[in-house]
Image 1: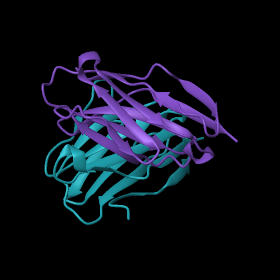
Image 2: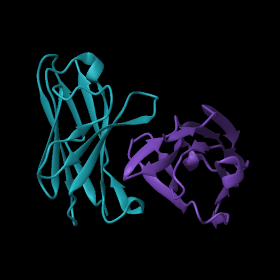
Image 3: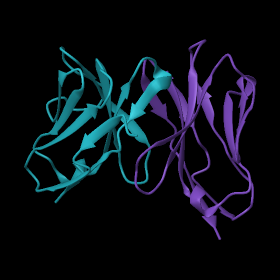
Length: 112
Length: 115
């Protein structure tokens, strides 16, 4: 069974602070994909990253970076120098046969 | 631009009525589409898999007679909430894989309010 745990329900930071969103997953698959999505107040999901289970290399994209550690089944997401526009709900997810299993989400509040 | 659309983007209906939500893949064919439901301040939960040319498959706990799914063509799936009640008020999101899971596109969602 697929399961994703995002223990942080809500995080508040002040602009320019760095913030890390945690994600722990469970899967029996040997090959799997992990995802992060951003959901602004409009509701539309914004794709951020997809990671193949074979690729444990950390990834950086601008102010965003992801730390994938298979040994601890974690796929954490860090925003460096946060901005007000980063305020949203962030979901971590796994996929199994095209079905997505989302964590409960972390609401990020970035205050000016 | 968007590759999966939903219509309507929001709808208000009275209790006891039925409402239809459309999900379209805009520039690709999707033999399978998925429907998710998101209650306020909660996560997205998979409701069902819409299969073109065959019956939909529903996740455990989802009433198939209440949430009718029809995948009429390779680009269109519809979700009909029958005899809607206030507890059906939710945000409904569809998705369609293009080739593989990593090319899965989510629709913009439909906000349903049942009064």
